[in-house]
Image (cartoon, rainbow, N blue to C red; front, side, top):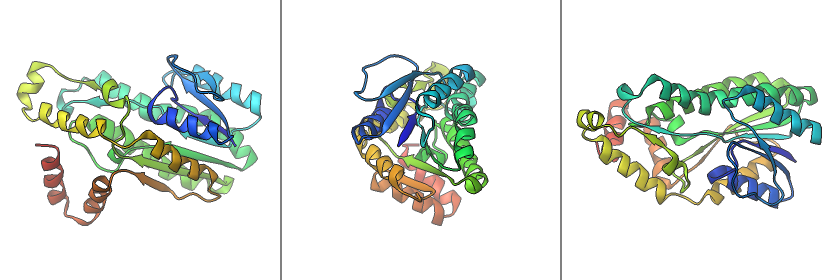
Length: 264
């Protein structure tokens, strides 16, 4: 398989690139900042915020390989803070990276797949794309956007034999935690006394989260499935249960449970 993965320098992206390359797939990975290289992976410099660099990266792979069999949208970032305190530019950045980055890449990936009438799109979403997480509202909003986009895209691409799958990870032990942009102003903490306590709980869960290689194994199986499912949830049992509760409980009760879990 000829596979393109966005954001392979660390975390889930790196784990997927290592696994898929090790299994003999031809893997191209995008990066914004240089880091240690993965044997067998071919690197393409691209910033999801820069359309020209995205276009150049996709064009380079198509020129070298002639096709892209699987596109895995993984690049992303997180912002933490009460929604009413988040500057507009930060919310904008969250949406630009997590959602518009996907849109930009697919603009150049899809034409060749459509022409061949074959391909797989795998979007790394989040548990936060299925429920609004307190103090991660901008992040949840960006992943909700990914979910809605993929639902529409899945229907539109059926005539072209292109599958669209979303993968919803729970907490994984990656650099995502340390790279999160957080509001720490005194007035924010004063306005929301539970904010610091909640973020500590969130980051503690992330740091003790699952090994990224677990998600890489799941994605490896999805890549090889002739007809993958529309969604795969890869998370600890308590997080999977939270999604069941969200479906069956009255919204008010579920929100109280979620608030309690996040120490609010």
